[in-house]
Image (cartoon, rainbow over all chains, first blue to last red; front, top):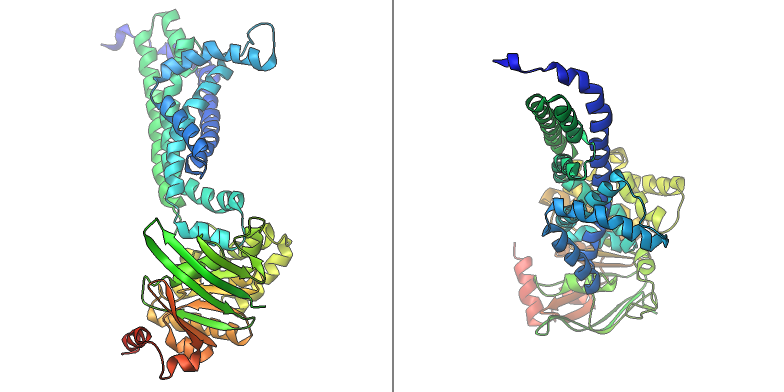
Length: 230
Length: 245
């Protein structure tokens, strides 16, 4: 029954799929996960701070981002970022940002909302006595946060953070709406060009599955290794 | 001038519940004061007020002449000079024992790595745990962890030490090793405020005993008087309960 299919097309397009497509996908995933984690941690600290105004701003941001469909946010930023760039730099025309930068900004801002909830839970899981002990030694808020609270929160939450990053890895394929050549975009282009839709999409699915599955197994393994003994 | 001066301190949780009622006492340099009382009497809260880990609404506390409530007081700097030992040790579980001892020395006192490390090792030697220096807290027993916690506080060269029920979370056979370290410290002349039910410790090294109940200081008198005959009925009942067996 497979005689009608041409699986050789996969082999021929491998360099393009991985060199162009997968590199983009992995770069976007890694950088926006990192950016989202940093921004999300700041948001979490804002929400847990004693200043109500900071908490309100962070809560508003998180609720807004979590209430919008990701595709909409991707579109929105793609068209908006050039104008924001224009305002910031004072240029005469909207600034050319490019697909990668635009996607990176979008995913960073979007993921920050999710990472902030993860980090908030992580920070709240640290016993209050740990913070007291830090203060009792004369450390200030910044030092207690960066040397005692965040390292423990990060380690406690590492499995959840990585799981979120795996979801992000799959979600990056949504950049297809901007006609950007990520892994799925590359597969799609080859599929359309050669009329090999079934083969290419089947292969893309297999690659996404293998990477995501292997990564989540790795996370489970890490979970047992990084747990802090109490 | 007393090392720790607590003057008419009151604290409320919410508008209704008063945890500390007009507490007044003073601890001289080199004095060892044991604070005891039934649970919920406010003794832990009082000791946490002394290094401003707990806020209070009325009264003043001065440590080495410095008023805690004064907005210009640099609280982290003051706290660095007061050692504190907690009921649940509160060692940092993600850091090795040496790092637990060096962190604040380096970040707060600005000591060099070598300086902090040699201070850490000599203190670990003193509490008998040098060979455990490169382990993590979770690999040590409760008694060992509490000795590390005492060493961590001493590494800051404190002018006074606060102990908040240091042996309450320990298995009975580990209490002695911690008390031994504390007795030694008391005999060296360290100023100590100790919340504990260990009356043996109080008898051995305390100069004074403070008895608290329902947020009030009921008794504050020299050890021999406290354990002697004349005292308040509430203290009598408390003592008879904890010394019964």
